[in-house]
Length: 157
Image (tube, rainbow, N blue to C red):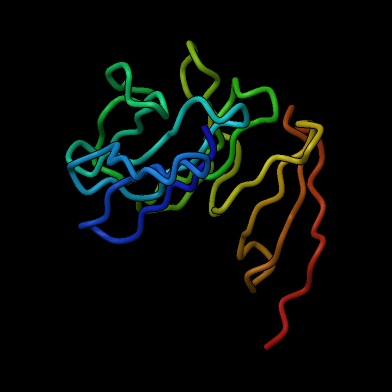
């Protein structure tokens, strides 16, 4: 099934549009935002605004959703799946914005503090992200295993 899943704002929901048939199916009914396709197109991760948690649901809606991250006080935004679809990079919007990595079946682990909008490289070895660490909002790259950190942009004002 091919389609596009989007969500913006507190009253958004996730819909799936099937290109072949032209059908539109509503996947969520509770204001889900920030939906993100898995690389294989079979699952959609999204923010659960009711519990400030992260859930994944089959894109065809055939099964119930699975809670990926324990509920908490801070909103969680799914940002990028690893190419193999096993790990999800997410942004936690708390007192300090941080990036966490969540490998399915494991506990989430911190990746970078004072950072947001992570994106896996196509080979899954690197994560690019935005951080104001240099005093401006710049883009950095860091190995998924945490080794090294390189600033690759210079913010222009």
